[in-house]
Image (cartoon, rainbow, N blue to C red; front, side, top):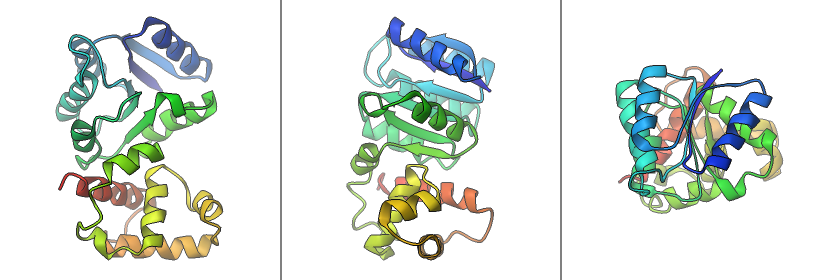
Length: 217
């Protein structure tokens, strides 16, 4: 698996390189600025990009803007944002552009290497990996948005956990429900969001993207 890393702090950047390579991933490029990131993503087309939000030269939202530009050039390019900040405007655009393979983790809430590497692999495989705090901020404005308003409170809980990348088994443990009950809730979510029967993993990603897309409204 080929990874491109964008992080302006040298020690953290080198630490990420060593961590990922120790777990069998190949770091194709490790850059420190937005322009370097865009160039690396378009030219190398990695399996996944690990991107900080605030990069030189402006230290505002350079990383997210570069990731968005790269996804326009390479549709579906998997991007995992790893940042101390939740930049809502561009994050919503990145997470809700309909192509899947996205994640957003907060640096101070990544508690071990296995958690992080699992998120990298999950996004590279086309899934999602979302920090609950990020979800809460991005979805704060969705309470009255259709068709999400049709979801029951329990279905919204299940969908939020799906957005974190959790399996039905993990959701059942978190909510103290049986796996069959979680399966019924996910089926209800898919139906209410108008997602036609297809591969379940694909529908989970589409459901999460529909949820995140509503936050743009």
